Image (cartoon, rainbow, N blue to C red):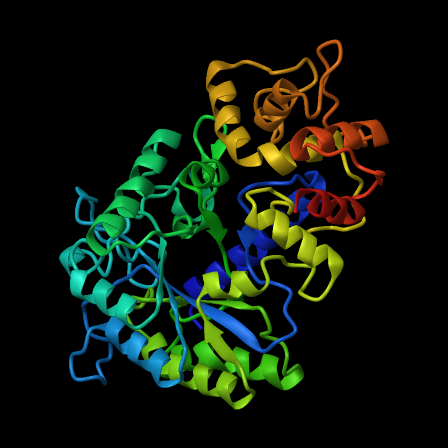
Amino acid sequence: MSLTTRAIGAAKKVKGRYAARRRERVPAYLSPVRRIERVALAERVCAMTFDDGPCALPARPDRFDGKALTLVLAETLERYGARGTFDIVGDTSANYPDRPGKEGTASWGGVRYDHYPDYGQDRSGGAANCPELIGRLLAGGHELTSHTYAHRLFGRKALVYGRRAFQPGLDPVVEDLRRLHELVRERWGYTMRLGRPPHYVDAVAGGFSSYDAYALMGYQYLAAGFDGAGWLPLGSYEQETEAVWRPAEAALAADPDAFCGQIIFHKDGYNMARRTPVADGLEKQLALLADRGYRVVTVSELLAMAPFRDIGPGTELFQAAKALLDRGWCPAFRDDTLRPDAPLTRGDLAMLVFGWPGAARRIELIRAGEAPFRDVPAGHPYAGAALLADRAGAVTARNGLFRPMEPASAGDQAAFLETVTGRTPAGATADHGHFLPLAAEMLL
């Protein structure tokens, strides 16, 4: 393993520990946009995602007679009855002036911007340039998700991409997302429902984040719980190929159910060494999964079976939460958990029903610099939903105070349910896990 690869791996570990500590410090909030990494599912079903394509260039090394890499991946999946989720870009050919970076580093394809499938070969990648590959993916039953049109960072990422250009604010981020969304909808009649930020950079200038952008798009945040690792440069192609499937082999040997509900990350393009180990490693990984009875489905199909990370099918809470989710409510927290023992707060009540419209209203409040209540700043996750809930009479403020993190009283819950369902509840309870079934019963 090279020094660069070890440095990247070390940086990922540091980032992971930092992110874990940060999550511990930040309170959990309900959210219309949920980060989907894996779901709670007892069945042997999982999903695979493929970033940065479509790619019309052949695999490297080419063992497939010049066939486009995306087509190689699609055909490999289909031999196993699998359907992939292809996280596509639109076109990176406008990402100039630029210069190529050092091979084997994060800037291999460009110092200021990303270029897919490679620097100077942008016209061989992306949905705008490879319509035949997009049509082929759809014909094969695969899913398309948004990796943005131009694959420009949403915000600054100093640790790895200190010299990388990034979007100057929320409006350019959303404009870029809409450009790809409309291209796919108009040309192929297909509506994307999931998005993954370039390099998982979430912060957007102006106090916003990728969650705000996805709320405006009606997307869920597509993440992954298992890294296929083919993007890393190792000592040889053989080592890189083994890195795609050996960890899966070890995980399955330790626990045959290790991939139940899992989302696996792969790359539809060159890695940092300008090689494509996924082209050969994918078949081995699929064979391992098939030998243990797994089905590989699209992420949307996986979410239709089990939308939540901590509670799977077969419980009253799951049925209630999924019924509310299907009606447009926001019953889950940002990390896609239901947390049945979490205290139900007044802010939670507001977010349950007003989460989606509240997201747009919160953005308006931030831009105007207006706090909706004396104890709720404009940037608070519940700011927009709290304002809408108060105006609807579902959760009301007193003396200019909303008290979003205060436990919801029985009176708060009763007033909320009566307002949003038109029915008077027979009773009310204190925690999230008991309130959702009550709400679902009254609503449905």
